[in-house]
Length: 62
Image (cartoon, rainbow, N blue to C red; front, side):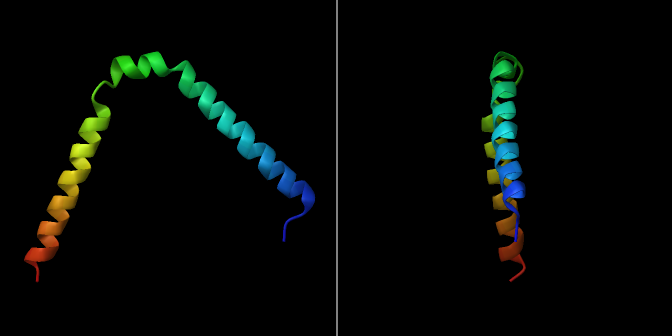
């Protein structure tokens, strides 16, 4: 299905891309902590509320 060269390129690309993402995240970690303090909690609350609203709509239609 894939040639050996394509597989080697894919593996190299995945490793290089992951390394770039990790490097970028580590570099910006201080700024993330400064500007996005309670983001995880807020996102969690919004997800739970969306599930509750969806469930309420679905159960009210039956």
